[in-house]
Length: 166
Image (tube, rainbow, N blue to C red):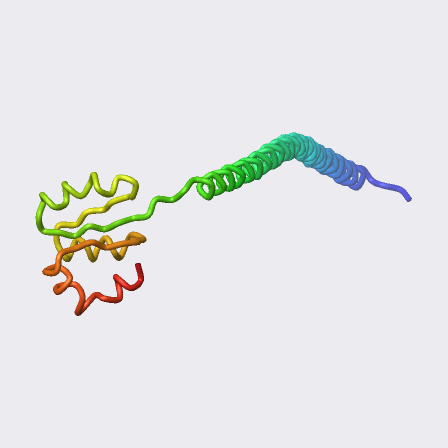
């Protein structure tokens, strides 16, 4: 096939244009490949950093678990020691003779103070009136109540059950 000059120049121009387009495509492809390579590199750096941080977190969690286990062991030991101390106190309390408790209820301060010497071997609790006596009876274990008749007459009708429980 024979070409004339115009055809030849047109073909050359087309070839030149294709060459330019090819080079442009190659440049764009090169840029895309560089971006892709950079992304892969960054991704690997992120993966490496993530791995490093994961290792640190794992080590920290392991340390915290070990500390927690040590604390749990210490708490268990302290509970055991506390229980043993309570048992020892209870056994000592059982060996120690308990004093009986007497409640003396009287409006007279003189009577309350003079009876102290009479009942030294007992635990003595004093009340000056009916209300104070009732509060003591509600909160303490009383073995004996000593009072005058006026107070008995005030207490008995409505609170005999307190005296009976003690």
